[in-house]
Image (tube, rainbow, N blue to C red; front, top):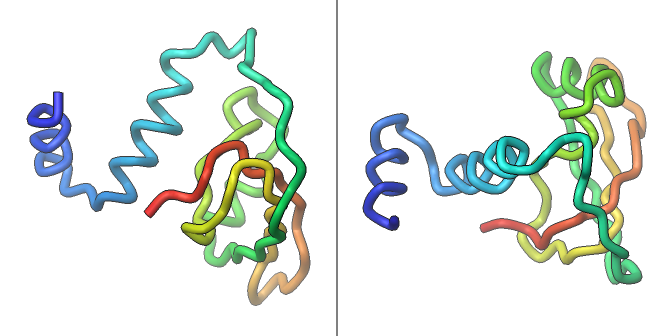
Length: 111
């Protein structure tokens, strides 16, 4: 399996982080039935993290939250020390410059 994943990563010129996002975000969406989301009790938060959104792609994604079943969860850049249950505050940079939303981390941070 490792060889197949490595070949896939090379074929599509993915970074390690992009491959992880593909496996743990997109792959999970494909494998799980969207009508029966897997939800379990999150542990109490240990940390609060700030993560920024900038540029058209980020803003378009954030503006679409809640419109589609697939935007209920997502992989988003955060500190690699993020732990399951931590609070993540998403802020938009210029030209918006405001706190957008507060999320909970459902997996630990990826390296």
